[in-house]
Image (cartoon, rainbow, N blue to C red):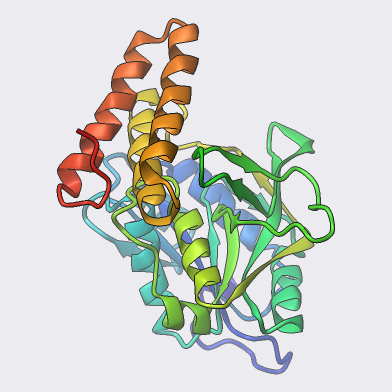
Length: 303
């Protein structure tokens, strides 16, 4: 795989891109994603796979299928942000101009990276460029047109499923497939690893925009996404981590953190209560406790 070589051809003039894929007990999906990258129509791609402390046979599976890939082993689960940061640091050691964050449960089309880079190179105000994500189970249906919006007064977030109307800008891009300019990362820093899972891409995008960078979407960069492959059978950590990270995000960016957090939690609890999901309500409350225990001196008081 030409993407697994440090010394790549420079004849095309294409900037070097480091692709970061985080694996956690998802070796089968990761191998499939790496297989897809073999067909990427881009000559200067360096791939870094981060194994985030998997307890299954992921490492052996990846090494057997792609023995030349750069594999970083963290030894423990650092979360999505921590795992990506480990990969970003490795990629930036190779003098990449861009870092492509790519979920292991995705299947990028051959022309995706070229479209992402073309969009970024056309406007140097863009700090990050997103892809158009389609559901792998329903390829004609868009999951996210690049990213979406967050209501900072209520904590409600939503994905764009079509190009935004003129004058309306996206608040964030989803890191399932997001190209980030190296200069942007050097300017604003890497992902905030206090966000163990969820909301970390939104926080990075808000920080990016706060520092004067803009967000873009490559409309022809189509990526199939299986959606939550590593957590689809584990509702407890999903509810816990999503809740904890949302509270952290709102405490940093909402103009009314207490109100936004109250509305956010009320909606989640009522939705689960209406469905009779008592255990899910406990998981939401555990997320609140996780936030408080991890950052007891946070600006947002919850008691």
